[in-house]
Length: 101
Image (cartoon, rainbow, N blue to C red; front, side, top):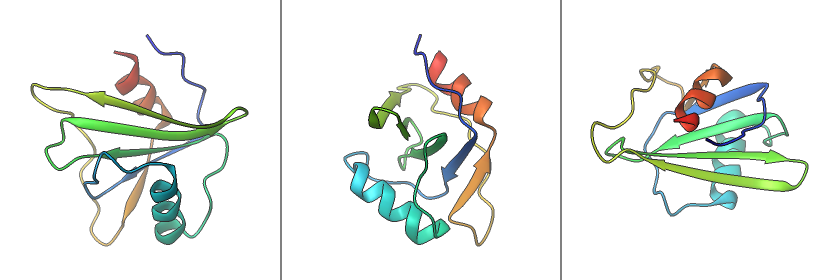
């Protein structure tokens, strides 16, 4: 079980991404879509086209972190997209549940 920090805010990017992307691309998406830079205490959650892989990006006192979780069977249940929005704020507890199993 992972010991994740307690996030103040969490955002789910609403479009599938390439799982090879890293910090620079995540920060660029965040800045372009939300107009702000990611802060400590905020989590960014991304998924792939098949919805069987999640990537979590966050910053803490030691730097930036990326965690990936793969569900080979069944995929993940994620909130439905909201039309016209590139990302949606989600409950930080959802991130904790997804990455603690």
